[in-house]
Image 1 (cartoon, rainbow, N blue to C red):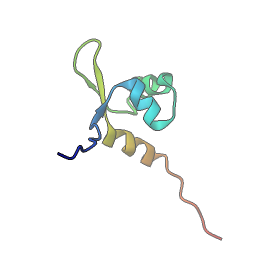
Image 2: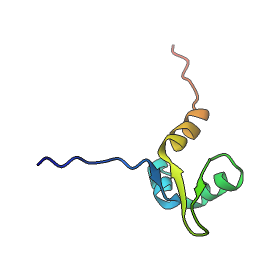
Image 3: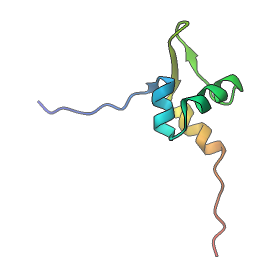
Length: 67
């Protein structure tokens, strides 16, 4: 049987910070500012969609102007 590595669809805030290469504090700030959508499963369990993380990064993309 062949093992397949699954990519998670949701990450906890600390893992989301590692995924984007930012601090956990930045993730919390984006949550508080409502820049980053998240799901609060319970008081202590917050999940962030990987697709939402990619979308937030895409909002801040600056296109290069070729020479």
